[in-house]
Image 1 (cartoon, rainbow, N blue to C red):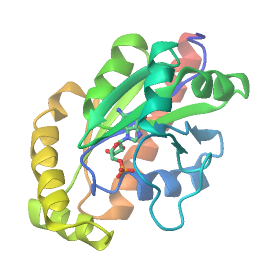
Image 2: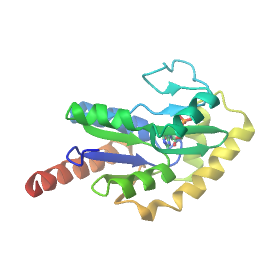
Image 3: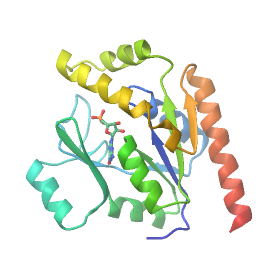
Length: 193
Ligand code: 5GP
């Protein structure tokens, strides 16, 4: 796989604001493009197959693991999530800055495989804020909410493994900080290439 395309891995607990930050960044850096992951999770209201995720059955997901289709995959809660090799290749071929918005174990794996990838961890300002944000998504029963909060605490302990850690206390400030990181890294890469 090409090492020439730039890759940005954005991670952080569920509810840290990763997707909101990404959407805002896209408006400012048009070359950004997110890989569409595969998952066995059921679609939430409004989510579309092939756009938000490739929604697979467990058997379909496992078949793809066996053919080596994933560069990384994890079991997160009761579901599998994985980054498809062909998605990264597709975006690199389009000369995009490839963005992966994934949980911490997958992010660490990507960093091992692509050492030049920039890894950014987004921290929620507090556990209370996180609970509120996860809850806003609705459609989650108390057990799943508690499980996600427990996972979030474990994920926050991994923030030291990332190149950058940005606190999403004020959304605009968080977006500005990550924008500056990407632009700075792009400039350095250009000088280096
Ligand atoms: P959700 O169910 O809220 O869409 O996603 C749950 C978690 O899985 C989030 O932290 C999300 O970033 C992460 N995730 C989504 N796609 C992937 C993937 O391809 N690989 C990994 N490792 N995590 C993913």
